[in-house]
Length: 99
Image 1 (tube, rainbow, N blue to C red):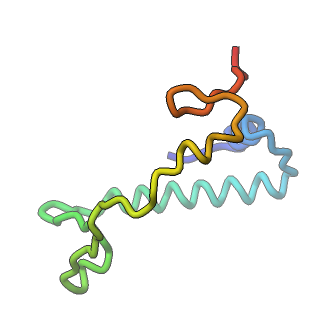
Image 2 (cartoon, rainbow, N blue to C red):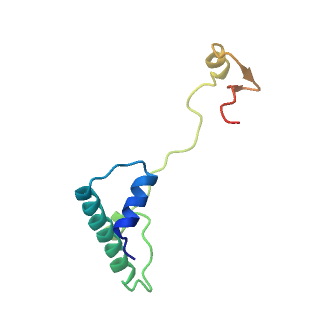
């Protein structure tokens, strides 16, 4: 897959970017270079290769150090919501902004 100059112009328009011709050409070569890299990576045969959970796992056996999921802070919901203009059932009420 490769993009054309018109594709770059359309993407820039959608992103609300104004690119001069030098920037557009540079962007075109960089994006096409990225697509070339992706295609080269897709061409590698990975049959029988186990996916890694972490890149260091390829070098050494690692175990994740996870802490227990326990409550460590007191529940201050009511105190935190005292200054709110509107609260209902423990939730902040805000005005509707999308119609």
